[in-house]
Amino acid sequence: MPPKTKVTTETIISAAIEVVRQRGFENINARTVSGQLHCSTQPVMYHFSTIDSLKKAAYKRVDQLHSEYLMNTPPGQDPVLGIGLNYVRFAVEESQLFRFLFQSGYTEKKSLLEMVDSEELVPVLEAMREGAGLSLRKARNVFITVALFAHGYASIIANNHLEFDEKLIAEHLERTWNGAVLAAGQEE
Image (cartoon, rainbow, N blue to C red):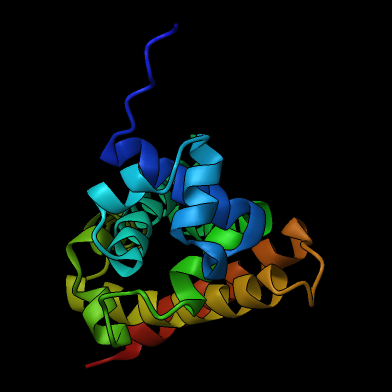
């Protein structure tokens, strides 16, 4: 008889993410995750005493994947434009994960200002600061403008209400970026 596969916390989180990809975050439960793993529900409930704790762990992992995805911009491309396009592209390629991150209520950040001050955003703000020669305070203000614009596009696309037109979105992101940088330069 072959040895039983050991079900770990990591494999359970990965299975929960796969459930999100296939069926949406609303369908994370012991039965769907154990089905993904081809095991009983017992290992899932052993590692995660509640489904909510499993959802939070899966959310944290998806947030990490999203951050890595955003920062993977092509060499030579303006980093801010690349990050903005990646944000929208993630909503296209991983619409269920995008919804999990931004429409499920599992974010720990409760306001835009908490998000802007988060540790995860430091690389993005640094890229913006360096790319436009802005102070950190001005880069935060520019980020808020560009992020809200990109998030609007991404949300509409992730919810199947708009087709992804990379060229058009890139033009709009560039205009938004330029306008926000110009406005930041005019601040006292």
